[in-house]
Image (tube, rainbow, N blue to C red; front, top):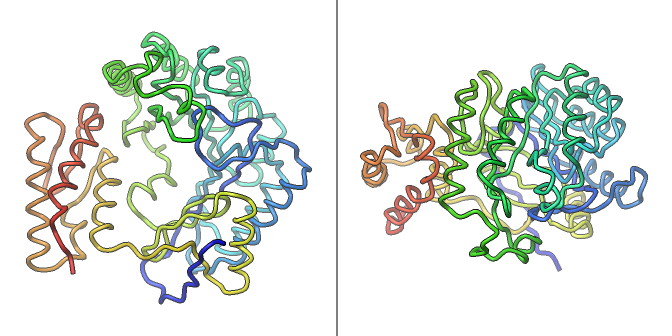
Amino acid sequence: MLGYLFNKRTRSGSAPKAAYVHIPFCQQKCHYCDFPVIVDNKPNSRRRSQYLETLRWEIKLTSSRQQPLTSVFFGGGTPSLLTPAELGQILQDLQQQFGCAEDVEISLEADPGTLGIHHLKEYQNLGVNRLSLGVQSFIPELLQISGRTHTVQDIETAILKIKECGWENWSLDLIQGLPGQTLDQWQFSLQKAIEAQPKHISVYDLTLEPKTRFYRDYPEDSPQLPGDELTAKMYCFAHEFLESHGFIHYEISNYAQPGYPCRHNLTYWQNQPYYGFGLGATSYVDQVRFQRPKTIKAYREWVEQQAVFGDVEMLDYPLEEKDELLEGLMLGLRLKEGINLTQLLKPFKGGIKDSLQSIIVNQLSRFQPEGWVGNQRNQWFLIPPQGFLMSNTVLQHIWLALDDITIL
């Protein structure tokens, strides 16, 4: 039996201006993926229809804060499996429930093998103005090893279609550290990415997540996995290469041409509130970060409970001030601009504020001689690429130093 919190808290904090919508359908599950997905690419399947019905129901049940959305992100799964009619219904629900700003950014994740000219044009007509193309690699054998269903030819065809339809703001995803991947292959994929002329490139380091096929097939010490030294070379090469072609390394894993960072993802990294809708989606509202159930049955039950009782969340509670501080540090230091420590410590008063300031500054300062950390007028930031590479080490030292601090 699922546990629920029937939330009657007084609303506080700023209203969310961003919404994530999870579309779980895939043609098959990739070998590195641990997201809640459903293998179902049939447009008229009963399971798909029931899920979309539940998703739309949840949106309609969510209280509006009279704050129009400035970003909407359709993630998955494979949102590009949606028909324009299905996507249009969801966008209409969001518009009616929350409203959308005139310049709203609407992003859609897409698999290269699922894009057709008709759908691309219809997506544009619906207001989708940003595509995120899940390329992952331009090497055929690496696509096959990863369980991707698309081919290099599919990638090239999709890019041609995107350009033919006049898409300006689109992103391309790559993964480094795949089994058997060499530095030459990585450099080749980056070169092909540049030739494709996207406005944004995401470079993700492979993580072996439990319950994935990669986790079962490749122990961490597997000789087939590129070692730390090689993946560090890949990361540093990507930084130098992409910045030399006009991209700004604005976040640990993300690069953008000037004016084209992902507005929606900046919401996460700036620790701002956001709605989440759909299977396994996480929301951050009223200082509560919570995740919806990850199976269709449990998710449907959760939404049904929300319809009866209102504001039903999985058992979770508002973040304590210290937890919010740690999250602010962790997320903010992912950005090139870093954190404004004065702003971050605003919720704290008196001696505890002074103590926190002293501890954090001391820990960040110790890495300045290494060239990993920079500071300008209490704006602290990691210096790429080495600072980004060593971010876990920097954060670990801060966590340990703050461990003994009690905030009442």
